[in-house]
Image (cartoon, rainbow, N blue to C red; front, side):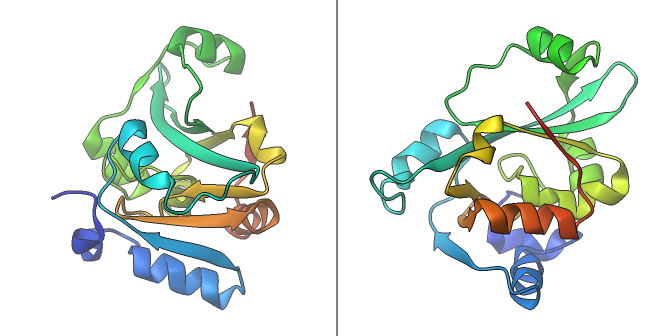
Length: 175
């Protein structure tokens, strides 16, 4: 199965259910539908259709990582940021970091590769996943991310994003 909304009913928490939860909480967001995006390059190809010129936007790449103690970490960074796992591990004091398997990703965050997103913390918060966010998110007007599937993108204001994380019981470690 791929990470598109076509298969969202196989997820522990569907994209439609997530969007309904945001609506119930009174969270305002913009929703965009597009072809499935699997890489930052794919995302850049469609961003021109919804990113406004001059907007202070944070477009994310998301890494699901495990440390040598088998703890799970979701790290959301500005999409163009270069990442060296050794340096990142040292900065976070985590020891060796490696990418988690697709099975572990699904088990802990309830998403498939290509749809990793801070919004997966709707599953990850109760599964002990630690969340780290690029400090650029503290200055962004809008944060763009997938709503658990990779053929949709939501844009949340910074305050709406922080409200969602608080409602999910997520502690954000800014990096």
